[in-house]
Image (cartoon, rainbow, N blue to C red; front, top):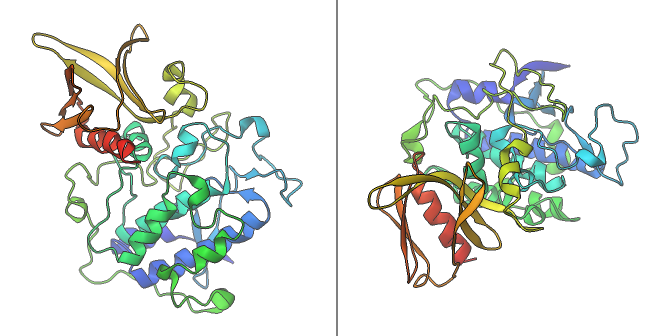
Length: 366
């Protein structure tokens, strides 16, 4: 019989799981994902709140309201399954949605593997990897892959999460035809008896005396605050028609659809081009400032757009050479984009200057 306990309930009490505890439960999630993926089904809403514990303490994946059967799926009748024309619709929960979904790419098994990486990160740290003050900011961090690891993560845990959170869904361990064999052989899972996993005695999850939840100091980032949302305080979007269901007694918040997320800016993209970073910023001049939407794409292309008239106001000539294109950060909010002919100053009220520098330099060094 499945209990009403969720794996998230325990690390909320404890602060975070130990690595041995996280290894066991992550292994059981891997085991379950391998099973449903072999059936040709993508879950699309893997997160700690959907991992239930049986009375014996083993993991069961719950909430199949957002599943997507693949063409060769062994499941022939699946109530509420997404149809092919909805395959790119944003479903899931903001903190766990993969970047390819934000760019309206079709669903793949890699979607669940990204969420597995986010879930393992949260088991080990007590917070999701892309937590921020709003869903929009969460999306920005996901698109920019703004990923920071606490110091106490082991090298093996860092490496596995880093690989699961690869921007290319086909490169995530478990995504290829033989991917689960590779995933199970990862050093993080050393010692796991995969053949007898469900027969093993699960860890006894109990809060340790004096254990506190890790907060900003663990990640050396003052913008990470317990008041920020994104770890399940927002309910997930269940179906393309917008119907939602609550997570326990948590506050229900409808997430913006992916259409509202990018439809305004889609007209500035070419076929196959996707947004890597986008922010509403102030373009600073000597006596005035004007709000513009600054957009970085994978083409690569760097433009700024008048958000009211929806016209391109400037196209910053791209170069992989830092002598021809560089970014200087003056403060968390202020940065300059420098080219041989012009230096443009911007102010990001959301203090993402360093994220812009990382995104541009990361694309130059690709």
